[in-house]
Length: 203
Image (cartoon, rainbow, N blue to C red; front, side, top):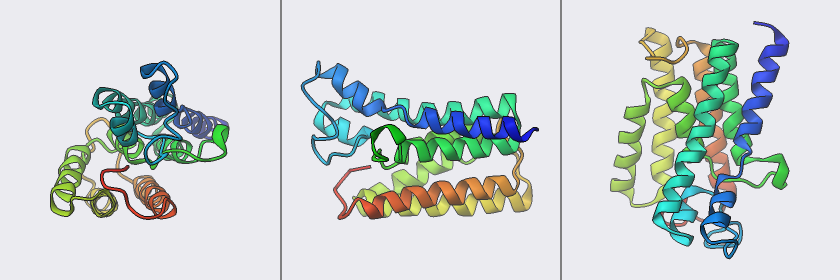
């Protein structure tokens, strides 16, 4: 794997992450009447779209945000290699949270992180859904549920790497998986912290 290919994978991953799914979908869904960055919580993500534009449009945004991060990891895995896949998936989360095109003000990264996990850590993805759903059911708020999910993600990465458990179609568990998980989880946590007081259901 060449350095140029690795850097290219990271750049492509970041650029894919910057695609403003919520802005595009809310504009199309309301024929320009709603700017999701100024509606509801102002967060350009799936859950704010869900509340401010409609359930169906919110689901579309969640799928698109997850899909772009998943795609970033998978194309890097196919064309460059394992380490690039982890790096590109991480970059896609960063691009979603801090997109250069909009003054580094993006979404909170939950859906993007989920897509990145599905792309390069698929063995953990079903468990991730269970943990997040359990957190929502227990805490009834997005922030503690998110913290539980992010913690489980990092712990799982350490366990998969330590015991070399199979990762379905994803890259072989390695130090790259741990770095991906720690950085990805940290970015989501930091974004939530910077967003201020928790809003019920906001992500």
